Length: 390
Ligand SMILES: NC(=O)c1ccc[n+]([C@@H]2O[C@H](COP(=O)([O-])OP(=O)(O)OC[C@H]3O[C@@H](n4cnc5c(N)ncnc54)[C@H](O)[C@@H]3O)[C@@H](O)[C@H]2O)c1
Ligand SMILES: O=C(O)[C@H](O)COP(=O)(O)O
Image 1 (cartoon, rainbow, N blue to C red):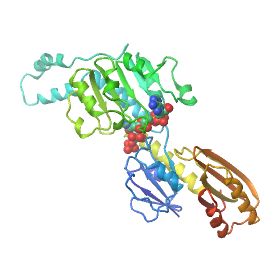
Image 2 (tube, protein in one colour):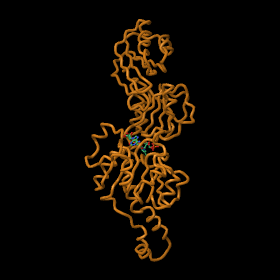
Image 3 (cartoon, rainbow, N blue to C red):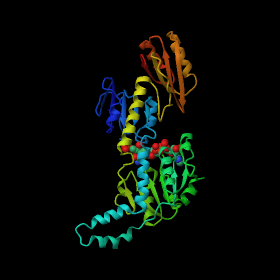
Image 4 (cartoon, rainbow, N blue to C red):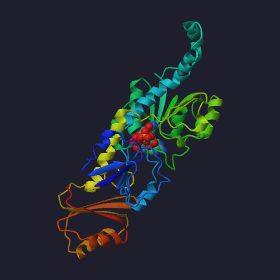
Protein backbone atom coordinates (compact mmCIF):
# COMPACT_ATOMS: atom_id res chain seq x y z
CA UNK A 1 0.00 0.00 0.00
CA UNK A 2 1.42 3.40 -0.99
CA UNK A 3 0.54 6.36 1.20
CA UNK A 4 -0.03 9.76 -0.42
CA UNK A 5 -0.33 12.96 1.58
CA UNK A 6 -2.34 15.72 -0.06
CA UNK A 7 -1.45 19.26 1.02
CA UNK A 8 -4.13 20.97 -1.08
CA UNK A 9 -7.51 20.01 -2.44
CA UNK A 10 -6.72 17.76 -5.41
CA UNK A 11 -9.39 17.14 -8.05
CA UNK A 12 -11.28 13.89 -7.47
CA UNK A 13 -10.50 12.51 -10.94
CA UNK A 14 -6.79 12.75 -10.09
CA UNK A 15 -7.18 10.89 -6.82
CA UNK A 16 -9.25 8.29 -8.68
CA UNK A 17 -6.10 7.39 -10.63
CA UNK A 18 -4.71 6.02 -7.39
CA UNK A 19 -6.63 2.78 -6.92
CA UNK A 20 -7.99 2.14 -3.44
CA UNK A 21 -6.39 -1.35 -3.41
CA UNK A 22 -2.91 0.07 -3.74
CA UNK A 23 -3.13 3.64 -2.48
CA UNK A 24 -4.30 5.52 0.55
CA UNK A 25 -4.54 9.30 0.11
CA UNK A 26 -5.26 11.72 2.94
CA UNK A 27 -4.34 15.16 4.23
CA UNK A 28 -3.02 13.69 7.48
CA UNK A 29 -1.13 10.46 6.99
CA UNK A 30 1.81 8.91 8.81
CA UNK A 31 5.02 8.20 6.84
CA UNK A 32 3.77 9.12 3.35
CA UNK A 33 5.57 7.68 0.32
CA UNK A 34 4.69 10.75 -1.70
CA UNK A 35 3.08 14.17 -1.47
CA UNK A 36 0.54 15.74 -3.83
CA UNK A 37 0.49 19.53 -3.65
CA UNK A 38 -0.74 22.64 -5.44
CA UNK A 39 0.39 25.99 -4.01
CA UNK A 40 0.88 25.06 -0.33
CA UNK A 41 4.18 26.46 0.92
CA UNK A 42 6.44 23.51 1.76
CA UNK A 43 9.56 25.51 2.62
CA UNK A 44 9.10 25.32 6.36
CA UNK A 45 7.62 21.82 6.36
CA UNK A 46 9.63 19.00 7.85
CA UNK A 47 9.55 16.25 5.26
CA UNK A 48 9.31 12.75 6.80
CA UNK A 49 12.17 10.42 5.78
CA UNK A 50 9.61 8.16 4.07
CA UNK A 51 8.92 10.67 1.26
CA UNK A 52 10.17 9.46 -2.13
CA UNK A 53 8.45 11.96 -4.40
CA UNK A 54 6.47 15.19 -4.53
CA UNK A 55 4.06 15.95 -7.36
CA UNK A 56 3.01 19.54 -7.94
CA UNK A 57 -0.39 19.54 -9.64
CA UNK A 58 0.46 22.70 -11.55
CA UNK A 59 3.40 24.52 -13.11
CA UNK A 60 5.21 26.71 -10.57
CA UNK A 61 7.42 24.88 -8.08
CA UNK A 62 8.73 27.84 -6.07
CA UNK A 63 6.65 26.60 -3.09
CA UNK A 64 8.82 23.46 -2.88
CA UNK A 65 12.35 23.34 -1.41
CA UNK A 66 13.88 21.80 -4.55
CA UNK A 67 17.60 21.79 -3.60
CA UNK A 68 16.84 20.10 -0.26
CA UNK A 69 14.67 17.51 -2.03
CA UNK A 70 17.36 16.81 -4.61
CA UNK A 71 19.94 16.32 -1.88
CA UNK A 72 17.69 13.78 -0.17
CA UNK A 73 16.83 11.94 -3.37
CA UNK A 74 13.22 13.13 -3.42
CA UNK A 75 12.01 13.38 -7.01
CA UNK A 76 9.85 16.47 -7.63
CA UNK A 77 7.38 16.52 -10.52
CA UNK A 78 5.17 19.20 -12.04
CA UNK A 79 2.52 19.06 -14.77
CA UNK A 80 3.79 21.10 -17.71
CA UNK A 81 1.06 22.70 -19.80
CA UNK A 82 -1.81 21.08 -17.89
CA UNK A 83 -3.26 24.41 -16.79
CA UNK A 84 -1.91 26.61 -19.60
CA UNK A 85 -5.24 27.15 -21.35
CA UNK A 86 -6.92 28.20 -18.10
CA UNK A 87 -4.25 30.86 -17.55
CA UNK A 88 -4.27 31.96 -21.19
CA UNK A 89 -8.01 32.63 -21.12
CA UNK A 90 -7.70 34.77 -17.98
CA UNK A 91 -4.76 36.71 -19.43
CA UNK A 92 -6.75 37.52 -22.56
CA UNK A 93 -9.74 38.50 -20.39
CA UNK A 94 -7.42 40.74 -18.35
CA UNK A 95 -6.20 42.59 -21.42
CA UNK A 96 -9.79 43.71 -21.93
CA UNK A 97 -10.50 44.15 -18.21
CA UNK A 98 -7.59 46.49 -17.78
CA UNK A 99 -7.76 48.29 -21.11
CA UNK A 100 -11.48 49.02 -21.01
CA UNK A 101 -11.59 49.90 -17.29
CA UNK A 102 -14.24 47.25 -16.85
CA UNK A 103 -13.77 46.63 -13.14
CA UNK A 104 -13.92 50.35 -12.33
CA UNK A 105 -16.93 50.87 -14.63
CA UNK A 106 -18.91 47.94 -13.23
CA UNK A 107 -18.11 48.96 -9.64
CA UNK A 108 -19.32 52.48 -10.36
CA UNK A 109 -22.53 51.22 -11.99
CA UNK A 110 -23.26 49.04 -8.95
CA UNK A 111 -22.55 51.97 -6.63
CA UNK A 112 -25.57 53.76 -8.13
CA UNK A 113 -27.95 51.27 -6.52
CA UNK A 114 -30.75 53.07 -4.67
CA UNK A 115 -30.32 56.33 -6.59
CA UNK A 116 -32.68 57.88 -9.18
CA UNK A 117 -32.51 58.06 -13.01
CA UNK A 118 -30.01 55.27 -13.50
CA UNK A 119 -29.99 55.28 -17.35
CA UNK A 120 -29.32 59.02 -17.36
CA UNK A 121 -26.55 58.78 -14.79
CA UNK A 122 -24.96 55.90 -16.73
CA UNK A 123 -24.90 57.85 -19.99
CA UNK A 124 -23.52 60.93 -18.25
CA UNK A 125 -20.87 59.10 -16.25
CA UNK A 126 -19.59 56.51 -18.73
CA UNK A 127 -17.00 58.77 -20.37
CA UNK A 128 -14.77 58.35 -17.29
CA UNK A 129 -14.22 54.74 -18.24
CA UNK A 130 -13.20 55.11 -21.88
CA UNK A 131 -10.32 52.75 -22.66
CA UNK A 132 -8.48 51.68 -25.82
CA UNK A 133 -9.18 48.62 -27.96
CA UNK A 134 -6.41 46.05 -28.10
CA UNK A 135 -6.59 45.42 -31.84
CA UNK A 136 -3.55 46.93 -33.57
CA UNK A 137 -1.73 47.50 -30.28
CA UNK A 138 1.52 45.80 -29.32
CA UNK A 139 1.67 43.03 -26.73
CA UNK A 140 5.05 41.97 -25.32
CA UNK A 141 5.10 38.36 -24.07
CA UNK A 142 7.99 37.48 -21.78
CA UNK A 143 8.47 33.71 -21.56
CA UNK A 144 7.29 31.55 -24.42
CA UNK A 145 6.57 28.30 -22.62
CA UNK A 146 3.25 26.50 -22.33
CA UNK A 147 1.31 29.64 -21.34
CA UNK A 148 3.29 32.32 -23.16
CA UNK A 149 2.92 30.60 -26.54
CA UNK A 150 -0.86 30.26 -26.13
CA UNK A 151 -1.21 33.88 -25.05
CA UNK A 152 0.98 35.11 -27.92
CA UNK A 153 -0.95 33.10 -30.53
CA UNK A 154 -4.37 34.17 -29.22
CA UNK A 155 -3.35 37.82 -29.08
CA UNK A 156 -2.08 37.63 -32.67
CA UNK A 157 -5.45 36.13 -33.66
CA UNK A 158 -7.16 39.11 -32.00
CA UNK A 159 -5.25 41.45 -34.28
CA UNK A 160 -2.47 42.50 -31.92
CA UNK A 161 1.14 42.95 -32.94
CA UNK A 162 2.91 40.46 -30.68
CA UNK A 163 6.53 40.60 -29.57
CA UNK A 164 7.90 37.47 -27.90
CA UNK A 165 11.00 37.09 -25.75
CA UNK A 166 12.44 33.80 -24.49
CA UNK A 167 16.18 33.15 -24.69
CA UNK A 168 15.61 29.54 -23.61
CA UNK A 169 12.59 28.66 -25.76
CA UNK A 170 12.17 24.91 -26.24
CA UNK A 171 11.95 23.37 -29.69
CA UNK A 172 8.46 22.11 -28.84
CA UNK A 173 7.28 25.62 -27.91
CA UNK A 174 8.88 27.14 -30.98
CA UNK A 175 6.95 24.67 -33.17
CA UNK A 176 3.68 25.83 -31.59
CA UNK A 177 4.36 29.56 -31.90
CA UNK A 178 2.44 31.42 -34.61
CA UNK A 179 4.63 32.79 -37.40
CA UNK A 180 2.94 36.13 -36.73
CA UNK A 181 4.75 36.48 -33.39
CA UNK A 182 7.80 38.70 -33.77
CA UNK A 183 10.99 37.70 -31.97
CA UNK A 184 12.04 40.61 -29.74
CA UNK A 185 15.83 40.96 -30.02
CA UNK A 186 16.10 41.98 -26.36
CA UNK A 187 14.12 43.09 -23.33
CA UNK A 188 14.80 46.78 -23.96
CA UNK A 189 13.07 46.68 -27.33
CA UNK A 190 10.10 44.80 -25.90
CA UNK A 191 9.80 47.27 -23.00
CA UNK A 192 10.00 50.30 -25.28
CA UNK A 193 7.51 49.14 -27.92
CA UNK A 194 4.79 47.30 -25.99
CA UNK A 195 1.43 48.81 -25.04
CA UNK A 196 0.79 45.74 -22.88
CA UNK A 197 3.33 43.37 -21.35
CA UNK A 198 2.52 39.95 -19.95
CA UNK A 199 4.98 37.87 -17.92
CA UNK A 200 5.09 34.05 -18.21
CA UNK A 201 8.33 32.95 -16.61
CA UNK A 202 9.13 31.01 -13.42
CA UNK A 203 10.16 32.81 -10.25
CA UNK A 204 13.81 31.94 -9.68
CA UNK A 205 16.87 33.68 -8.27
CA UNK A 206 17.67 35.14 -11.70
CA UNK A 207 14.13 36.36 -12.46
CA UNK A 208 13.23 37.76 -9.03
CA UNK A 209 12.43 41.48 -9.23
CA UNK A 210 12.77 41.50 -13.04
CA UNK A 211 10.30 44.38 -13.20
CA UNK A 212 12.00 46.89 -10.91
CA UNK A 213 11.71 50.68 -11.02
CA UNK A 214 14.41 50.95 -13.66
CA UNK A 215 12.82 48.45 -16.07
CA UNK A 216 9.35 49.90 -15.54
CA UNK A 217 10.76 53.34 -16.38
CA UNK A 218 11.89 51.92 -19.75
CA UNK A 219 8.33 50.83 -20.62
CA UNK A 220 6.20 52.89 -22.98
CA UNK A 221 4.41 55.60 -20.98
CA UNK A 222 0.95 54.41 -19.92
CA UNK A 223 1.58 50.77 -20.88
CA UNK A 224 -0.16 48.07 -18.86
CA UNK A 225 1.58 45.18 -17.12
CA UNK A 226 0.02 41.74 -16.53
CA UNK A 227 1.54 39.31 -14.07
CA UNK A 228 0.03 35.84 -13.97
CA UNK A 229 3.34 34.24 -13.00
CA UNK A 230 4.43 35.13 -9.46
CA UNK A 231 4.36 38.31 -7.37
CA UNK A 232 8.13 38.25 -6.73
CA UNK A 233 8.85 38.98 -10.40
CA UNK A 234 7.60 42.56 -9.99
CA UNK A 235 8.50 45.17 -7.39
CA UNK A 236 5.21 46.31 -5.82
CA UNK A 237 6.57 49.65 -4.61
CA UNK A 238 7.90 50.45 -8.08
CA UNK A 239 4.47 49.59 -9.53
CA UNK A 240 2.67 51.92 -7.14
CA UNK A 241 5.06 54.79 -7.85
CA UNK A 242 4.89 54.25 -11.62
CA UNK A 243 1.07 54.22 -11.51
CA UNK A 244 0.97 57.38 -9.42
CA UNK A 245 3.29 59.08 -11.93
CA UNK A 246 1.31 57.89 -14.96
CA UNK A 247 4.25 55.83 -16.24
CA UNK A 248 2.25 52.60 -15.79
CA UNK A 249 -1.33 52.57 -17.08
CA UNK A 250 -2.36 49.56 -15.02
CA UNK A 251 -1.18 46.38 -13.32
CA UNK A 252 -3.05 43.09 -13.26
CA UNK A 253 -1.74 40.68 -10.65
CA UNK A 254 -2.92 37.13 -9.98
CA UNK A 255 -0.88 37.02 -6.74
CA UNK A 256 -1.92 40.16 -4.83
CA UNK A 257 -0.05 41.23 -1.72
CA UNK A 258 -1.30 43.57 1.02
CA UNK A 259 0.26 46.76 -0.39
CA UNK A 260 -1.54 46.36 -3.73
CA UNK A 261 -5.08 45.91 -2.45
CA UNK A 262 -7.34 48.85 -3.23
CA UNK A 263 -4.67 50.69 -5.25
CA UNK A 264 -6.09 52.63 -8.19
CA UNK A 265 -5.44 50.92 -11.56
CA UNK A 266 -4.25 47.71 -9.90
CA UNK A 267 -6.49 44.73 -10.55
CA UNK A 268 -5.99 42.14 -7.83
CA UNK A 269 -7.18 38.71 -8.95
CA UNK A 270 -7.20 36.03 -6.22
CA UNK A 271 -4.90 33.52 -7.96
CA UNK A 272 -7.57 32.28 -10.35
CA UNK A 273 -5.30 31.49 -13.33
CA UNK A 274 -5.60 27.72 -13.01
CA UNK A 275 -8.88 27.67 -11.11
CA UNK A 276 -11.01 26.04 -13.78
CA UNK A 277 -12.44 22.53 -13.55
CA UNK A 278 -10.55 21.65 -16.73
CA UNK A 279 -7.15 22.81 -15.47
CA UNK A 280 -7.67 21.31 -12.03
CA UNK A 281 -8.61 17.96 -13.56
CA UNK A 282 -5.73 17.97 -16.07
CA UNK A 283 -3.17 18.81 -13.39
CA UNK A 284 -4.49 16.29 -10.87
CA UNK A 285 -4.61 13.44 -13.39
CA UNK A 286 -1.14 14.18 -14.73
CA UNK A 287 0.39 14.53 -11.25
CA UNK A 288 -1.21 11.30 -9.99
CA UNK A 289 -0.15 9.37 -13.10
CA UNK A 290 3.42 10.57 -12.74
CA UNK A 291 3.49 9.53 -9.08
CA UNK A 292 2.12 6.09 -9.92
CA UNK A 293 4.66 5.60 -12.68
CA UNK A 294 7.46 6.49 -10.28
CA UNK A 295 6.26 4.57 -7.24
CA UNK A 296 5.21 1.43 -9.12
CA UNK A 297 7.80 1.34 -11.92
CA UNK A 298 10.54 3.75 -10.98
CA UNK A 299 9.97 5.74 -14.16
CA UNK A 300 10.53 9.50 -14.03
CA UNK A 301 8.49 11.76 -16.29
CA UNK A 302 8.27 15.55 -15.97
CA UNK A 303 10.57 15.90 -13.02
CA UNK A 304 11.98 19.34 -12.25
CA UNK A 305 15.05 18.10 -10.35
CA UNK A 306 15.94 14.62 -11.67
CA UNK A 307 16.40 13.50 -15.28
CA UNK A 308 13.47 12.05 -17.11
CA UNK A 309 14.16 8.32 -17.29
CA UNK A 310 11.71 5.67 -18.44
CA UNK A 311 12.27 1.99 -19.13
CA UNK A 312 9.46 -0.36 -20.09
CA UNK A 313 8.97 -2.84 -17.24
CA UNK A 314 10.17 -6.37 -17.96
CA UNK A 315 8.20 -8.05 -15.18
CA UNK A 316 11.46 -8.73 -13.38
CA UNK A 317 12.99 -7.21 -10.28
CA UNK A 318 13.83 -3.54 -10.69
CA UNK A 319 16.43 -1.63 -8.71
CA UNK A 320 16.42 2.16 -8.95
CA UNK A 321 19.26 4.36 -7.74
CA UNK A 322 19.56 8.10 -7.38
CA UNK A 323 23.16 9.26 -7.29
CA UNK A 324 25.57 12.18 -7.63
CA UNK A 325 26.64 12.74 -11.20
CA UNK A 326 30.33 12.07 -10.61
CA UNK A 327 32.74 9.54 -12.17
CA UNK A 328 32.96 5.92 -11.01
CA UNK A 329 29.56 5.66 -9.26
CA UNK A 330 28.14 3.40 -11.98
CA UNK A 331 31.17 1.10 -11.88
CA UNK A 332 30.88 0.88 -8.10
CA UNK A 333 27.19 0.00 -8.44
CA UNK A 334 27.73 -2.67 -11.09
CA UNK A 335 30.64 -4.26 -9.24
CA UNK A 336 28.54 -4.40 -6.06
CA UNK A 337 25.85 -6.23 -8.05
CA UNK A 338 28.61 -8.51 -9.39
CA UNK A 339 29.81 -9.30 -5.87
CA UNK A 340 26.35 -10.77 -5.22
CA UNK A 341 26.42 -12.70 -8.50
CA UNK A 342 23.67 -10.56 -10.07
CA UNK A 343 23.58 -10.21 -13.84
CA UNK A 344 22.04 -7.01 -15.27
CA UNK A 345 19.29 -7.74 -17.82
CA UNK A 346 18.62 -4.12 -18.74
CA UNK A 347 19.95 -0.85 -17.48
CA UNK A 348 19.25 2.83 -18.14
CA UNK A 349 21.29 5.71 -16.79
CA UNK A 350 20.46 9.41 -17.25
CA UNK A 351 21.97 12.46 -15.71
CA UNK A 352 20.88 16.03 -15.11
CA UNK A 353 23.32 18.58 -13.76
CA UNK A 354 24.71 17.31 -10.51
CA UNK A 355 22.48 14.26 -10.19
CA UNK A 356 21.82 11.03 -12.05
CA UNK A 357 19.28 8.22 -12.04
CA UNK A 358 19.53 4.55 -12.87
CA UNK A 359 17.00 1.84 -13.57
CA UNK A 360 18.38 -1.69 -13.44
CA UNK A 361 16.34 -4.84 -14.16
CA UNK A 362 17.62 -8.20 -12.93
CA UNK A 363 16.17 -11.72 -13.17
CA UNK A 364 17.60 -13.05 -9.91
CA UNK A 365 16.19 -12.37 -6.50
CA UNK A 366 17.83 -9.48 -4.69
CA UNK A 367 18.84 -9.97 -1.06
CA UNK A 368 18.09 -7.11 1.37
CA UNK A 369 21.76 -7.09 2.26
CA UNK A 370 22.63 -6.09 -1.33
CA UNK A 371 20.23 -3.14 -1.23
CA UNK A 372 21.89 -2.03 2.03
CA UNK A 373 25.31 -2.41 0.38
CA UNK A 374 24.19 -0.30 -2.60
CA UNK A 375 22.99 2.41 -0.21
CA UNK A 376 26.52 2.55 1.22
CA UNK A 377 28.15 3.02 -2.22
CA UNK A 378 29.98 6.32 -2.37
CA UNK A 379 27.89 8.78 -4.43
CA UNK A 380 24.61 6.87 -4.10
CA UNK A 381 21.83 8.96 -2.54
CA UNK A 382 18.90 6.53 -2.49
CA UNK A 383 18.08 2.98 -3.60
CA UNK A 384 14.74 1.30 -4.14
CA UNK A 385 13.72 -2.24 -4.92
CA UNK A 386 10.58 -2.89 -6.99
CA UNK A 387 9.89 -6.65 -7.13
CA UNK A 388 7.94 -8.02 -10.13
CA UNK A 389 7.86 -4.65 -11.85
CA UNK A 390 4.95 -4.75 -14.31
N1 LIG B 1 -1.61 32.21 -12.35
C1 LIG B 1 -1.64 30.89 -12.32
O1 LIG B 1 -2.56 30.28 -11.84
C2 LIG B 1 -0.50 30.14 -12.97
C3 LIG B 1 -0.74 28.89 -13.58
C4 LIG B 1 0.33 28.24 -14.18
C5 LIG B 1 1.59 28.79 -14.14
N2 LIG B 1 1.80 29.97 -13.50
C6 LIG B 1 3.12 30.61 -13.48
O2 LIG B 1 3.50 30.84 -14.82
C7 LIG B 1 4.83 30.39 -15.02
C8 LIG B 1 4.97 29.91 -16.44
O3 LIG B 1 4.17 28.77 -16.65
P1 LIG B 1 4.33 27.86 -17.95
O4 LIG B 1 3.40 26.71 -17.78
O5 LIG B 1 4.23 28.68 -19.18
O6 LIG B 1 5.83 27.36 -17.75
P2 LIG B 1 6.85 26.88 -18.84
O7 LIG B 1 7.96 26.23 -18.11
O8 LIG B 1 6.17 26.09 -19.91
O9 LIG B 1 7.39 28.23 -19.51
C9 LIG B 1 8.26 29.11 -18.89
C10 LIG B 1 9.09 29.76 -19.98
O10 LIG B 1 9.84 30.84 -19.41
C11 LIG B 1 11.07 30.90 -20.11
N3 LIG B 1 12.01 31.72 -19.34
C12 LIG B 1 12.67 31.40 -18.20
N4 LIG B 1 13.42 32.44 -17.80
C13 LIG B 1 13.21 33.44 -18.69
C14 LIG B 1 13.69 34.77 -18.82
N5 LIG B 1 14.52 35.29 -17.93
N6 LIG B 1 13.26 35.52 -19.88
C15 LIG B 1 12.38 35.01 -20.78
N7 LIG B 1 11.92 33.75 -20.72
C16 LIG B 1 12.31 32.98 -19.69
C17 LIG B 1 11.47 29.44 -20.26
O11 LIG B 1 12.41 29.27 -21.29
C18 LIG B 1 10.12 28.80 -20.61
O12 LIG B 1 9.94 28.74 -22.01
C19 LIG B 1 5.03 29.28 -13.97
O13 LIG B 1 6.38 29.15 -13.60
C20 LIG B 1 4.18 29.74 -12.81
O14 LIG B 1 4.94 30.53 -11.94
C21 LIG B 1 0.78 30.65 -12.92
O1 LIG C 1 1.89 27.48 -10.94
C1 LIG C 1 0.73 27.12 -11.10
O2 LIG C 1 0.41 26.08 -11.69
C2 LIG C 1 -0.35 28.04 -10.65
O3 LIG C 1 0.08 29.07 -9.87
C3 LIG C 1 -1.59 27.37 -10.16
O4 LIG C 1 -1.59 27.23 -8.77
P1 LIG C 1 -2.83 26.47 -8.05
O5 LIG C 1 -2.71 25.05 -8.46
O6 LIG C 1 -2.61 26.67 -6.60
O7 LIG C 1 -4.07 27.12 -8.56
